[in-house]
Image (cartoon, rainbow, N blue to C red; front, side, top):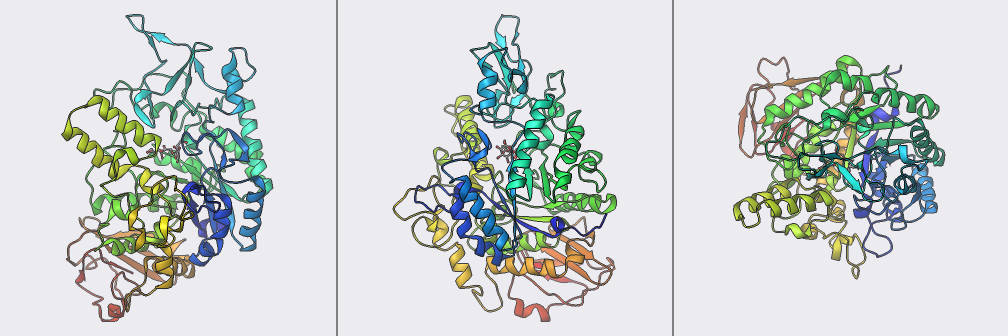
Length: 585
Ligand code: TEU
């Protein structure tokens, strides 16, 4: 196969529609709001737009609980609005990728309403139903000990009074898992793909697609988290026995007939052979996956997500290098991202988001991502350096079901323990998905221009919008001589990446100075050009000698996140003095 593919070179921009732009003043983002910003996205350098779910949904998990795959939720608009959006996207020579959430549906989907209506329903077997177990005291227990992913204090099984059985609901009780063993379910999913491809979509981001095949004996998970009643069960549902068969079937029956971009969200998987079976050039499963290694860097390994784990530049280099080398050496394909709607803001997580350093951090992460191999994903607001919600916000302000469940669990476990609750609150502020879900900060007018001044946004706007917003960065692309706004820096970074795609998209990769605790550096090269990226992941000045003995000789520095007028005067050999959070290309 030709190594050059449009979906490899594409810059994908993820839209979280509820928080993107509200066009009708109800405080909730919508499809016409997206259409309004297409020129902004085109100008930034975006090729493909991925929209998180806009389908009909009771919004128990912000649309990742779908009640009708072939209709739009009225809060987002209509199918006609989507048709118009697609037409406008095409006009600008861009593409649309839909979010495909088919590991589970909403409990309000007609299939599930039918399935739960009686044990003899023709759709009973479309979901995963099991009888209760009973403990020694005769108390009813779920079929196994798997924990709910978005509320780990609870079971992944939900009891149904009417038919007196449990159904599997890995994420929340409102998201029953589909039974992929049933060929009728798979055929129904294939129809959904065709429906959207025929309407003009160019591919899918496939939600937790590696969870669709479960070990059919549904065994108990080993105890990994001490003292927890329910345990992570991923060993038995992530990359299960029939996953590759199901993915190949999707390919043969549907995808092979269209020209698509496919990216599978694949939590839990670390095994290289498993990854290559999905994304290897000859595998015919998916173009690429979202691997979680980089965004899990601050989780205690094997534990639940709401934990804090120290890391340094060595861990980051190890993770990045492993995936870069794996794809290059074994002919697979990567995705490059550090943000999405499930993760805290990258500038807060990996750098220093104080007023003094935020812009340096945002540009550092831009230099990092725009110089890595793979398809690049930018999340809304990342291009202007949006940061986490302020620590002063009370947990009661958080809207995400996962945050709500976590806070509730802690209050139940430690009702009057101020220390424990303070820690829980701190973890929430660092890790909550809410951090990525606040309204996009368009300008400095009330509600950041996200919605009408007289309406109430569904989620509170971070008050720093008065000075962190897109309009300010667009009108002042050069805030001080020799520097660019975060937005302008991203725009130029994307341009540069495309201009030198043989290096940045397709070229070779090698880490420089892997053992340094604060500096992240690598070289990228094609047959004709080579670049070095050097990133100081610390707030300290560093006398870096990592280029010595690396075989790299720098001719000139071409970009940096400090005053670029100084680049010419920077030393290019021996010792490189790196200021706090400084990045150089
Ligand atoms: O996320 C799946 C997933 O496993 C994680 O990203 C998970 O949400 C996170 O670790 C919890 O903090 C996908 C969607 O991206 C997410 O928004 C949905 O809630 C989930 O699937 C269920 O559809």
